[in-house]
Each structure stands twice: as C-alpha cells, then as structure tokens.
Length: 287
Image (cartoon, rainbow, N blue to C red):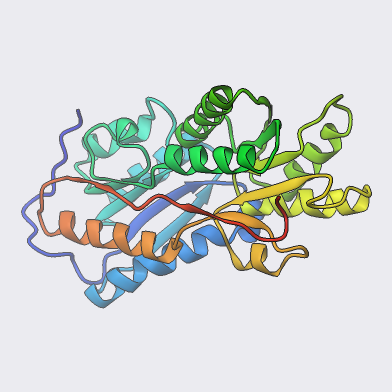
C-alpha cells in the first residue's frame, strides 16, 4: 500500500491547479469526446474552489512520470489525477514518493491504496455480452483498447468469461482507440470464416470507424453486423444508424472525481468510490 501525504492543508489552494498527464496520441485525443466531458465535470466542482485542471498529453508512461516529477518539483500542481493505469504502474508509487494528493480513476486493485473512483467495467461488459447473446448472436468480437491497460484487461477477461458461460465463440481485435483501429477490425473480419456477427468496441471513435468501413464494404448494419460502442457520446447518437452504446454520464463521473479531489486536498482520508455501472443503450446499430 502507498502512504499518501496530504500535508497540513485544510482546503484546496486557490490558484494552483491539479495535474493530469495523459498518455494518448494527440490526434486520437482530439477525436475522442470522453476526456472533454470528463474534464468539464471535474472543473464544475473544482473551478468554484479556485482550482483548474492542468492537462498535459504525453506519448509514454515514462514521459508522464517525468512530467509529474517536474510539476511537483516546481510546485505547479497541488494534486494529480491518474487514469488508464497499467498493472503495477510506476505512477502509483511515484505520487507516494512525491507526497502528492492523487485520485485514481480505475480499478482499486491497481490504485495501491490511493483514493479511487471505479466505474465497474466488468459489470457493464457482462450486461452487454448477455444482451447480444439474448439477441441471437453466437460469435462475438471485442475491439479492445491498448492491451497493457488494466481496464482493457478487465474488459477482455470479462468478455471471454461471460461468452464462455453462454457457450458462444469470441474473437478479439487489438485497437488503440483510433478510427483506423475500427476500420482494421472490419477489414480483418471479412477474412474470418464464420465471422463474428456483433462487435463491442472499447470507445466510440473505433466504433464509428467500423461503421463507416462496413458501409464502404457493403455490410449492412445491423443486419450483417451489429456494433456496440463503449462510452456513449453525441457522435454515437448522430451516426447513421445511431450507435448502440455503453452509456454513463461522463460529466457526472468527472464531478465525482472533482469532489474526491476536493476532499483529499482538504485533508480527508483516502477512500474508494464505486460509481454506478454504465448501462447498454440499444439504438439502430445492433439487434
């Protein structure tokens, strides 16, 4: 367990931000609505306290750690947010060494005793697989996010386990949250005998890429191929057909993280908050 020092502060310091060093391809981040909504939710809680969110996009975990060290050394932030952790992630130990109040968005198992907000991805994946099986699908595909991320591992493991419980086949496609990854999944799909009839994507942008590629290749959605995106967005709702999606209120999640940050910046003890699981919203892209 990592000991977390919150110092002697009794309230957040107005004028000093909290930091989020996000490991993402900048082009992918620009197309992905999730973090815009998430940060808006956090700032709805923090900005009235005089605290903004300082976002730095980096390419690797090592670069994220370097940025976090620099922030701490220069006194640029008073707290940090960790997201998309890897198993045994070096950043968990680092914030303990830095004595930096931090909230993890992810499975508490990966948080090493830090405060955590967890959206129960395994519950949502179980529900999605069960719904697709109930609709008659006997071969399911999962277009996953980066394989090394802890939440990707949880989703993939749950996908395989629940499909096995129902006696249906599975195929997993590696992805990176980009539109191109969704395109690749559909292209690969066509080369599979007895191919999957439904695909679950780990974000909305990959699902949109797949939807466009399916149309280009003459695959009817959902008659030939059902598509389900993770994390609902306006992009899902405005697609043609509209994309079925695993949906939760991302701004409300950001607010929850903002409230947790405000608590620990005020000296509260670390705690784990279990958010309401996301739910499947069925639209025109799935049967």
